[in-house]
Image (tube, rainbow, N blue to C red; front, side, top):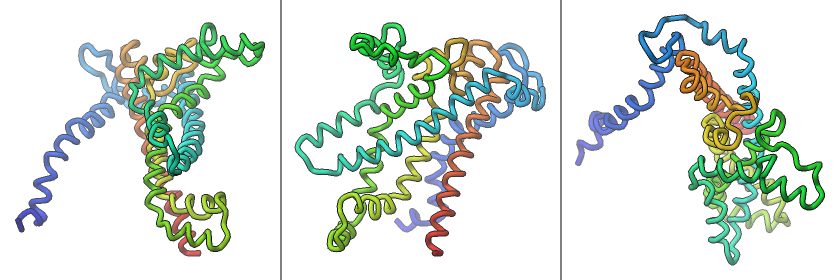
Length: 295
């Protein structure tokens, strides 16, 4: 089986994967980039308009609102998920009765279709008839019965919390894998030195999970830029598009307004922001590790 180890054989075995990846990923990206420089309604031929679609974004108030909401969800979701999933992973790493059931409950939302999650939380957070506000009013906390979704103020926070609830088990599982990979001798050495549980977490667990934190952060960034179903079911982007995210506004632009060229330019911006955000974090983390190594 020597031929399997040759460079030519390896390239040959990679060709089907590269072909599929090109057809379903690379080529659609280039098509989107091309149409982002055109004006196209879905009928007839597309007319080349240069960078007018990109200039138009800075004059489009709805796009700027969607961009602001997306960045808010990104910041809040990253903080909530990194902290929450790490703490949950610490609990999952403890051997206690009911641990398997706890893991199942935490991971369950991840396997539920996002559209179903949107429906569930839409009924819970609806400001008029939702379960949360109904409960708050029943116990005399009317002041806390705010417009959780559908408004201009609290929708990004609500979307970030629901996104956190949905993805918590997935990211906690990644953290748990990283924790399991930490050698037990390091904890034993800390115990000999008199370290308590909190000191072990801060001085052993967290430093040893730097690569895992990077992986989770990149996945969160790319995940936020793919949120659509939650917005569609929970707020519908309303009122008057005030709770749109970039993905939902892109969908509205393309499939409702039939502005394919402008919608493709928004898609290109989403892809660009996702790539820039991921690579920027990776570079910052790599530079920090290099500085610590040099020290």
